[in-house]
Amino acid sequence: MIARVMQIWAPRAKNASKVAGRGGVVMPRPRNGAARPQALARSAAALPLGDPWLLGAALVLLVLGVVMVSSASLNIAERQFGHPFYYIIRQVAFVVVGVIAAVLVARTRLVYWEKAGSTLLLVGMVLLALVLLPGIGKVINGSQRWVSLGLFNLQASEPVKLFVVVYIAGYLVRHGAEVRNSILGFIKPMLLLTLIALLLLLEPDFGATAVMFATALGMLFLGGARLLPFAALMAALALAVVGLIFSSPYRMARLTGFMNPWADPFDSGFQLTQALIAFGRGEWFGVGLGASVQKLFYLPEAHTDFLFAVLAEELGLVGSLAVIGLFTLLVVRAYIIGRTAEKAGHSFAAYLAYGLGLWIGLQAIINIGVNMGVLPTKGLTLPLMSYGGSSIVVMCVAVALLLRIAHETRVPDPARTAPIVRVAGAVTS
Image 1 (cartoon, rainbow, N blue to C red):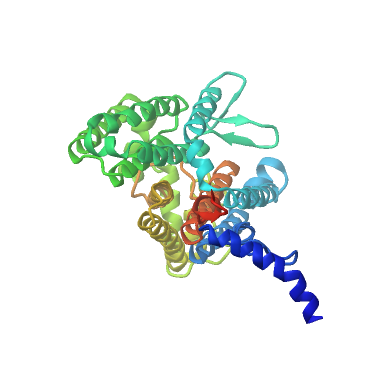
Image 2 (image 1 turned 120 degrees about the vertical axis):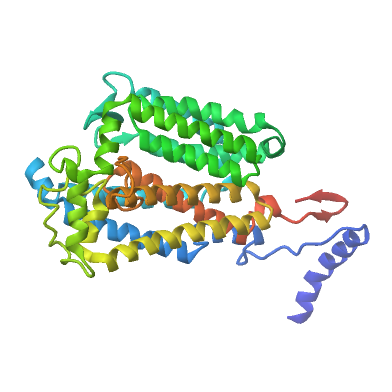
């Protein structure tokens, strides 16, 4: 038996020594039962779970969001549709779709996102234009922000915010030197974002415009933009915001209602006063899950924009701080992922992680600030928690991108980092 094995192996060893003698490197051919190294790497990348802390925080926020939407929407759904579980069923469906989308995104290499940045931004601008067309755009609560797709309404501003982050991350990779050394490198993306902002303001959607601009500016600053043009643009944006507030009666009403909601608690200050009452009733540990009174037709949009106020009433200060802590953990992990990618030399991944963390953090801060009366009403959802299919799915995709970044930083893409092997005088990789 041993002699038979040696008889089969001897010619192969002889041929291998000839190849090695010409300066080649022999890679042993795996048997049928053994997997190639690249195949192993690809199978490991099938479902990247690059950061358990990030994934855990996102899952807890998703589950808690479903629970709180269930609690806040029962009576509203009964009154509007005669079915108390209408919003609950839809929210669960949105979460399922979001998780499926997240799995697909987590299995997609970042290089495809980097190449598609400009195309995605163009698609987003087309969506924003479609929203404004009569018969296509759908008006809800006085704002034309949605495109009806039959089973659900797509809020165009949600994917647009994601596409802007992807585009700016790619722009910083392609034109990083120009951004750092020339004012034109800073102004070019701002002109494009100004066009998008005009489309958003025509809906109108002031909150999405503010978040988009703040996120893009933060990414450009992290990308090394010169301080003088950055400060000048910030001053110009501040003046523009003041002008927009004074040019629109409804924005002016929101501002005055925010500054002193108790001056008109039954009209312009009604929503904020009811939210503040919810916070007061919650005290330390809350009135108990499902026991909120403010959600019973007192607090408008209790299951969407003002979900955090209902949470504060039912779970108290402890529950509120726990949610804030989860968002803090999520954002901190995003920045740690970005910093790790930056150290590894993955510029696009680093800028993308910074942008996603900045976007999620800003939107969470604004929503919580509005609920607490610290900021004027903006109409922004609480990421991963508030009712709404567009927001839930897009935020799940954002978390999946962060997980993909963490994975590719820790386990390099085999197609990009495969070692060069010389076999019989030829170079392959």
